[in-house]
Length: 609
Image (cartoon, rainbow, N blue to C red; front, side, top):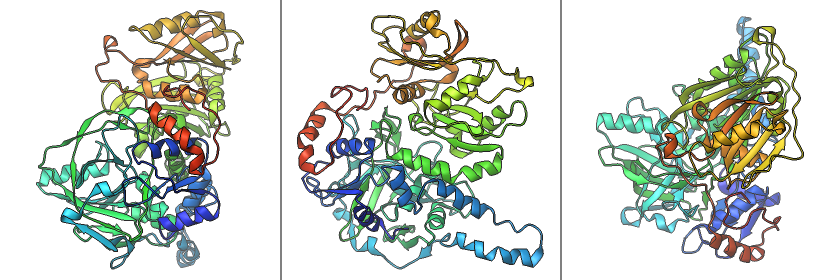
């Protein structure tokens, strides 16, 4: 547990996990390029002490490795989070009257800190800007990627109150700076903040909002966590439970909202639902693609409060792996016991970084009866933010859940067509490939051992072939059971033709999954999975076609064309500009950063770094 962000920074420095950069660096693209290289190489967190033209330093990379995220969460390993929650959920006294109840008292220490503590003032209100003093351009807010619509606040803890019930919400929603005193508020359709906004609009009221930056890193994590909708329980309670001490909250200076007393900054203000929405975006998002422009509410800032020596916390999102992969892993571990409470046959689950959270979920189960894999997958689709999952692969307990090994284990037992199922449901609004915004297809792959009622086992040997069909402009690679193919798509339905041609070749023997995607994708497993999962709507793009040894599941992860019936705009992949890459290359040794391995892809190409 850390009292505040600066205590966390000092601890990272003591453990050799922080580099201070004293050279002047721009918050427009340069910090992104440096931080992106660090997180992808497992490097240290960074403190940029001299940000050109801005009044405050930038801290980034605090969640840049699983080990550092565990340190931020106050545990040795992220798996320990599941243990803590399981202990809390084991507080049922059962039978035994007073004696049994008294036996629970030692366990109640698990709830220590659950309820926030109200305090008067706090370090975050040492300096107060009001009225014309409010100036967001004094803060080192990052423009992360070349096509971004402007600078974005990327680690905001957005506090709002339900206008009807008074329930608090703490969420993390990106905020594009519009001018020195306002931002857009990216309240997506399914978010609690959006629900507060909709209620305020219905009631004809302004909605007060406060945005905290910093504090105990556990609080930052809590804002990202899928807290279940339990009356009276919010993200401040989760943070207090995890840190073992209450979060100290003080009242805002211009809003009637509680704000973290130990934050670095707080932006106070309001959203007026009577106003027209503002155009927000594009934004280089956690999917690795740009989210295109859309309309969202304007947040008016009435005051900014901050510490005397405040540090601005930031993160970047984009092509995985990024910091958010470790925050997702923390939630994965933290909420495993709750998932097991509802679906007790779950043994474990994992959301691979290539799936950018919702696109790919591997779950292992203790299977006892036919159809149980579908029961569990459909149950997961009904659990909170898991409703956004696009592909769920179900395996037997003890099977690997990470890397290509998990998929290969499933393919040994999943006959395409017989053991795959397509349905529809809610999809993350950031998904660019679904049939409509927020609505699209889903795929279940039953990779469990088959019972007699399910058709029984059909022995199959996964293979990879040393030589593959020679097709001009087509790059190919096989892993046992998996065939990855990239090519330049120039006409409608070309992917289907390519799949049929490849599967007619003898090299489709031993293959159960064919992955097709665009030529600008590096031919590596995680990169191909990332591109394919982003670019499919399973209802449209998952096909079962014949190979020489039986059915093959084909996933068409190529860009969709208007001639194929796709009417939405297709966004570009996130790529840093060559000029920024060269500038950072030239300055790298002066920044005091560890050396990095050479690039795999020429500067400016989007095949990865």
